[in-house]
Image 1 (cartoon, rainbow, N blue to C red):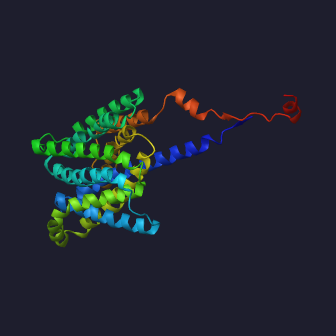
Image 2: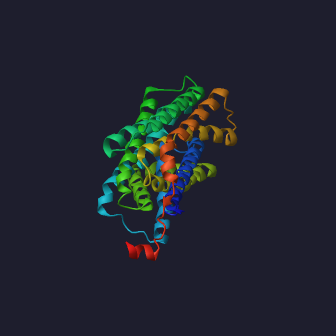
Image 3: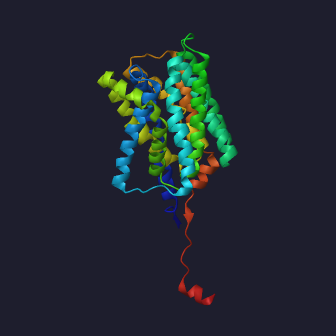
Length: 322
């Protein structure tokens, strides 16, 4: 007789983490479209601050409802570093960089981030680097390069713009790696909420710009900024932290390679930007690479699904004779 009940909680946790990662990736892809629309009315710093304030307010209300307290002292280092680098620096410099380079170049440079996460995770966190993860990341990066080249206008790039996008990728990667240890000491909601607050405080020098631009911005741009704060920030960063707490930083970083493919699809549906064949092929490569990196070797799958044997009850007579 066998019993597979011990495997069910693990499978359920794995599915929940995968679902949380999907939510994050889809919402972050939608953020690129919203940033493109709101960027015409808001400067990079003002847009980042408005987004973070909306996100911090949303997360603060959720914390009050759930009665979440302050994170333990041991988690604050990771929260502060990830908040400064990922919530603050990344958002400002990416908004700025996308004003100086075309979307394809920005997507190509920022997608160095998952590779940096894998390298930093292996070095600082001891994350394993299985062959399937490396192969999947290689395929996805090739897809990101294909998407970037196909969308590049060829004349919209600048050295400063490329440098800013590279700085955004570094801030993103370092923020993810710093966040991982904090999630072992505090909840995903705590880490996200206070990381968002740290980022908002760091962006306060842009408060004057935000106040002046809100008065002149069209309502649609302001709604895009609020959307960025509530969904791609408050919700997506929380689901990301939930999933990151249950897997390695390297595997989570590889998951974000699905973003370029989704951005192409969303731009097609919402902005009428029809992708060409090369762009579609690059998007397909991105998704294929994510599937490979998230898969497990057959031996591991079999080991995870083999039911745990339950010993047959020993008859009372046999126990007595023993």
